[in-house]
Amino acid sequence: MSDVRHVLVLPDRDAAEEVAEELADRFGVAEEPQLVRDALAGEDDAEDAQWLVVVEDPSGRLDVTALDAFAAEYEGWLEAP
Image (cartoon, rainbow, N blue to C red; front, side, top):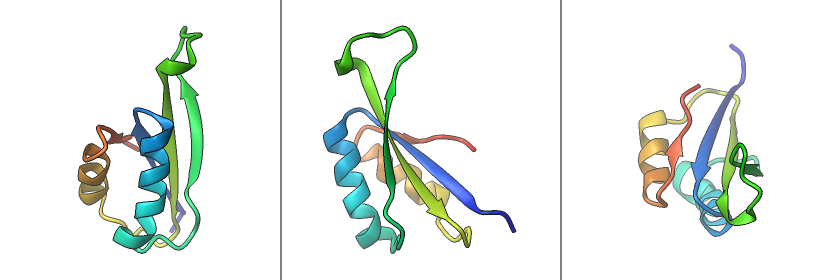
Protein backbone atom coordinates (compact mmCIF):
# COMPACT_ATOMS: atom_id res chain seq x y z
CA MET A 1 0.00 0.00 0.00
CA SER A 2 1.33 3.43 -0.86
CA ASP A 3 1.72 6.13 1.75
CA VAL A 4 -1.27 8.35 2.28
CA ARG A 5 -0.83 12.09 2.66
CA HIS A 6 -3.60 14.34 3.97
CA VAL A 7 -3.58 18.08 3.36
CA LEU A 8 -5.56 20.32 5.70
CA VAL A 9 -6.13 23.87 4.44
CA LEU A 10 -6.30 26.54 7.15
CA PRO A 11 -7.06 30.25 6.94
CA ASP A 12 -3.92 31.48 8.73
CA ARG A 13 -0.68 30.46 10.38
CA ASP A 14 -2.05 30.51 13.92
CA ALA A 15 -4.79 28.05 13.01
CA ALA A 16 -2.31 25.84 11.15
CA GLU A 17 0.05 25.75 14.14
CA GLU A 18 -2.79 24.89 16.53
CA VAL A 19 -4.02 22.12 14.23
CA ALA A 20 -0.50 20.70 13.86
CA GLU A 21 -0.11 20.55 17.65
CA GLU A 22 -3.57 19.11 18.22
CA LEU A 23 -3.16 16.34 15.61
CA ALA A 24 -0.87 14.33 17.88
CA ASP A 25 -3.29 14.51 20.80
CA ARG A 26 -6.49 13.96 18.91
CA PHE A 27 -5.43 11.54 16.17
CA GLY A 28 -2.21 10.05 17.55
CA VAL A 29 -0.17 11.35 14.61
CA ALA A 30 3.41 10.37 15.42
CA GLU A 31 5.24 12.25 12.67
CA GLU A 32 5.46 16.02 12.94
CA PRO A 33 3.02 17.56 10.42
CA GLN A 34 4.54 19.88 7.84
CA LEU A 35 3.30 23.48 7.66
CA VAL A 36 3.37 25.12 4.22
CA ARG A 37 2.40 28.67 3.36
CA ASP A 38 0.20 28.67 0.27
CA ALA A 39 -0.18 32.11 -1.29
CA LEU A 40 -3.37 32.32 -3.29
CA ALA A 41 -2.78 32.61 -7.02
CA GLY A 42 -2.36 36.19 -8.11
CA GLU A 43 -2.30 37.57 -4.58
CA ASP A 44 0.75 39.52 -3.43
CA ASP A 45 -0.68 40.37 -0.04
CA ALA A 46 0.70 38.01 2.61
CA GLU A 47 -2.57 38.36 4.53
CA ASP A 48 -4.30 36.39 1.79
CA ALA A 49 -2.10 33.33 2.23
CA GLN A 50 -3.64 30.07 3.35
CA TRP A 51 -1.62 27.58 5.35
CA LEU A 52 -1.43 23.88 4.62
CA VAL A 53 -0.82 21.23 7.23
CA VAL A 54 0.54 18.12 5.53
CA VAL A 55 0.01 14.93 7.51
CA GLU A 56 1.78 11.71 6.55
CA ASP A 57 -0.42 8.67 7.16
CA PRO A 58 1.74 5.69 6.13
CA SER A 59 -0.70 3.10 7.43
CA GLY A 60 -3.75 4.87 5.99
CA ARG A 61 -5.49 4.67 9.35
CA LEU A 62 -6.69 8.28 9.76
CA ASP A 63 -10.40 8.92 9.31
CA VAL A 64 -10.80 11.51 6.53
CA THR A 65 -14.28 12.49 7.74
CA ALA A 66 -12.93 13.17 11.23
CA LEU A 67 -9.97 15.11 9.79
CA ASP A 68 -12.30 17.27 7.71
CA ALA A 69 -14.53 17.98 10.74
CA PHE A 70 -11.43 18.77 12.80
CA ALA A 71 -10.15 21.26 10.19
CA ALA A 72 -13.64 22.81 10.04
CA GLU A 73 -13.34 23.68 13.74
CA TYR A 74 -10.57 26.06 12.64
CA GLU A 75 -12.48 27.34 9.58
CA GLY A 76 -10.48 25.06 7.32
CA TRP A 77 -11.05 21.88 5.35
CA LEU A 78 -9.43 18.68 4.19
CA GLU A 79 -8.25 18.76 0.58
CA ALA A 80 -9.69 15.95 -1.51
CA PRO A 81 -6.89 13.58 -2.59
